[in-house]
Structures are given as C-alpha cells and as structure tokens.
Image 1 (cartoon, helix red, strand yellow):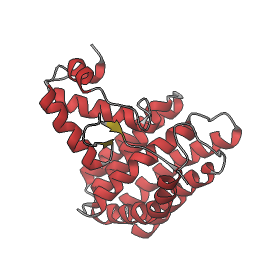
Image 2 (cartoon, helix red, strand yellow):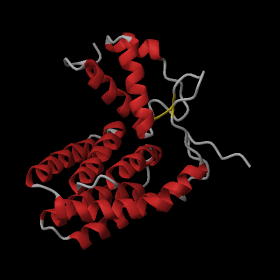
Image 3 (cartoon, helix red, strand yellow):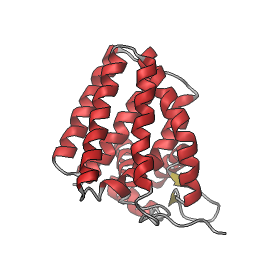
Length: 231
C-alpha cells in the first residue's frame, strides 16, 4: 500500500497526498485530477473525494469549472508577477505576528519541521525539501494567529512551493548550493528571532528569504511547468 494512504483517516490521507503532489509538482499545473482513480487509490467513495476537491479549490490548489474535470491550479507569468508583488507584504506580516503571538508549543513544532527540512537538504531530497519548506512557512503562518493573514499566506505558499521546486531541482552550481544553505540558515535565524519575540527582525528575515526566490527567477526565461500568458 502507498504510504500516503496509511492510517484510518483516508480522506485526510488523500488531502495530504494531493497537497504534496501539487506542491512538489508531481502533479504539474493544469494536470487533470482523476476522481475515480483517486477514489480507488484511497479506498473512498466519490462524494468525499468531490467534497475534498471543493475544499481544495477554495484554498487555491485546484480549479473547478462546470462540465470539466478538476485540474491542478495553473501558473503563468502573470501569476508569478502577482506572487512577487504581494508575497513580501504577507510573509513579512506573518513573520512579525508569529514573533508576537506564537506559543512555545508552536515554536517547538517549528523547530521539528526545520530539522526535517535540514535532513531533506542533507539527503538531496528535492521533493521533501519543497514540502518541508512549505510546512515551515505554514507553521509560521499558524503562529501569526490572524484570520486575515493565514488564508492569504496559504494561497501564496502554493505557488511559492512550485516556484521552489523549479529552482531547487537545479542545485548544480556553487552559487545555488550556497543559496540553498543560506535559505536553511535563514530558517534557523527566523526561529531564533521568533523565540525572542523580535518582530522587526523576523519581518526583515522574511524579506531577505523571498529575495532569494526573486533572484533565482532571473536565471530562467521559461521555467518548466509554466506557460506564458496569452497576449
């Protein structure tokens, strides 16, 4: 049995598997989601699968249209421009609020996620690196405890993870290896400043962290998995 299906909560296992497959681009932007195949794989009837599809569509993972199969949410140059315009405001705010509002238990969970991220880096596991990075920033968002920031952050993270997959799979130059280590170091520093409740330092680290992605964007004219917007 696929390890992603393990456990009594089959619907929860399906959600986790779909999220991971979309974030790591195992299911690329625009890919059709086979409702029947997913039902069979996870031992579910079709109604709970449809319910989960609607939920994930609301979160931005999936696109639903009348009389069309569900598809993984698309990406385009326009969506990338929108991402880099809004992401700094949301990530910086989330980091600041996490430093102000995060609990000790949430901080310990963040440290555990960072250990998993570091292991993925050491193991050169691109998919797990992307997924653990998403978990890290998702946890920071939860620590913000703000009903307006969290949904926006989660939507941004979908494309953040997919952008990350595009670039993390090419750590074949000294520069990119250095930037990957810098990203991991910035995670460690975020934990430190959140722990001492330094909101301004936490926000500044979020800005610097996003700048790594922005710089890497310039290295590719047409990243795999993205389509140019129609003129």
